[in-house]
Length: 123
Image (tube, rainbow, N blue to C red; front, top):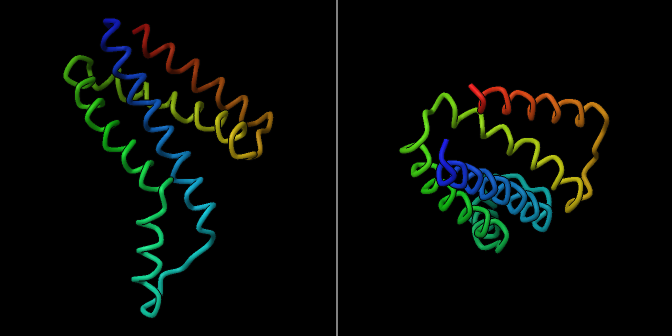
């Protein structure tokens, strides 16, 4: 894998993780909601106008473009498993930025993911 290919993959993964965290922060700001026929439009507008949700959607859009660029350079059988790094990154960042729980079981799971990605990358 070339340095450019690796950089594209890592950028796509980082932007995907940022998108998830921004969407979560946006939903935390809005609070719990349920769509009904009576409130569908106001709730949809509230979600659509939340800046963190808009930023998360933007990150997903840019991530998609970068992901396509990465796929043009890297075999999908190598690139796709690399997305698993995002699971580990999200767990750590959600703990750090959002105060989510971080247990020994999650740490073991993250270690397994990282080992698996390393094995795939070396193949």
